[in-house]
Length: 205
Ligand SMILES: C[S@@+](CC[C@H](N)C(=O)[O-])C[C@H]1O[C@@H](n2cnc3c(N)ncnc32)[C@H](O)[C@@H]1O
Image (tube, rainbow, N blue to C red; front, side, top):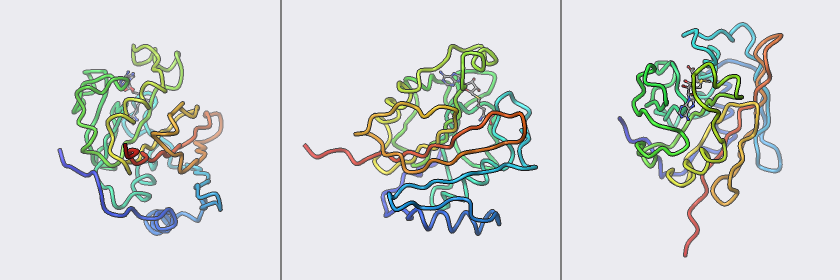
């Protein structure tokens, strides 16, 4: 396990987008709005297959794109990790299913075993529906409870990159929503959204 929580000044979003273009070679498909938030679209094209073939796994190329946005955070916490490719995005893993051999066998809704303060970047890929969770033989998660657990344990400045069909409910005093990126896989696949949150500073008492 490596400690990767950063305290130094983070890159600006424009620097992150410039790095994304440089590392991936993809044309610009995101911009920083005057409201300070990033909006964009990722079309996965031929790069959409799941290398591990795990149900609901990240499409090939997804992790490379995320990594390109966060060159300053090379070691992540993969939440709902499944069979995530940690060569594509190095990090520790959290899953409730022991068959996935996670670093932390834990429920994302409590995260009692996870030293969240060590991580400056969390990638979350929950089941999207009751039907999806049946594939993993789990009950459907409560997204707001997961976000609350993250909000309580992460250090200020940490990012959460949440891939879903729903914007998870979050506390505005814990997180700001900094980026909203639509993701299109290929025909006849569901649209998804990459929502990127940043943990807010703890208010002074
Ligand atoms: C969409 S899959 C993630 C796939 C992963 N991104 C990959 O590339 O392989 C969702 C994962 O969430 C796990 N899961 C479901 N409920 C959970 C919970 N309450 N806490 C932690 N993990 C959970 C499932 O076991 C499953 O591996």
